Length: 417
Ligand SMILES: NC(=O)C1=CN([C@@H]2O[C@H](COP(=O)(O)OP(=O)(O)OC[C@H]3O[C@@H](n4cnc5c(N)ncnc54)[C@H](OP(=O)(O)O)[C@@H]3O)[C@@H](O)[C@H]2O)C=CC1
Ligand SMILES: O=C(O)CCC(=O)C(=O)O
Ligand SMILES: [Mg+2]
Image (cartoon, rainbow, N blue to C red):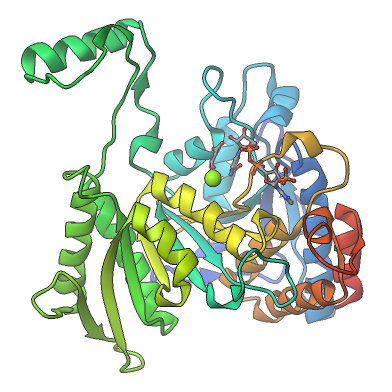
């Protein structure tokens, strides 16, 4: 049925039930993309660690049948020089429901557009979920890194990130500037002859579905607050819209009531009876608050570009993007991936920290309901860090550490299971 994807004979598909829960067979087929750059280092280590955790947790009764699918440079080798994201990769991600990917390169300026963004857009994976937590012993620039415990819900389908833009001097940009100046009365383009232009779409529907997920997460996980992070004072109808639509949704769908006349509001968690506060923060101020008063923030709902910046900033607070996991999700499909990119200078050197992708796989196992295997990965990560046998990123900041390679760190984790 596929041109180049080989479907393993010994596995079955994960399926989605009418209530959006998953039916996970004991031998699920899970597609994976190796990824560009350091993807070739971290992905095989992740596969090995996950297989070891599953084998240990279920004694052979459960096993993942991995199925390689292709995107990025490897895809151009398999499918032909210009095929960066084959149609059958998208089909497989959709059909098999749960998948995991290594990072993919996006050139700055010209060249191909982001394959990561294309995957999210094509499959409408509108939630980018990035939990940020501290592991004891990880070197951090903060005095009390354990106070950073947040979960980012980054809108993944809209915003300036959508890639609607025209280059300086192109026919498209000339047309747009003519339209804006002549038909829309825009007088504020400072250098019309030499501008590139980008469009920032942010919708009520897009905001509502994201904020609904963030509030739902706060309810299910007994979290005290959801903070809407935006730059609505300046971009009133996009980022300001996000804030207003978010607050309105909390009131309309969750019965939140204004605190002291608003805009903050609160409601009782229907599952625990505890209060959940919905608040907002302007993005620049937020970036200093998370450093100075991290304990005041829990679930974060934000727009695409803010979420990108906030993800790396928060990751740094708890030890860096070497251990920053994530997931891209729609209501049915979930594709797990690390927060970091391809770190090209380290590619192929068996050097970088595989922790982000391993923790992304841990999120995947939890999503599948394979909690015992997920727990084993967390405890193995904790023990590996405590043993101080760590990759360069931690070793360079940790006293008394033994530096191990990327695959070496995987081995340390497996020994700890
Ligand atoms: N989802 C995705 O696939 C993503 C793809 N990208 C793409 O990746 C490419 C490179 O992007 P770049 O901006 O350099 O960002 P990267 O995240 O790839 O790397 C930035 C720095 O982060 C550190 N780092 C990254 N990965 C690891 C790791 N596994 N372990 C330890 N430290 C790590 C390194 O720091 P140090 O130098 O201090 O060692 C590295 O130099 C670009 O093409 C970009 O578009 C970027 C983000 C996400
Ligand atoms: O797509 C890319 O190349 C970058 C994406 C990114 O930085 C992210 O999703 O965090
Ligand atoms: Mg990023």
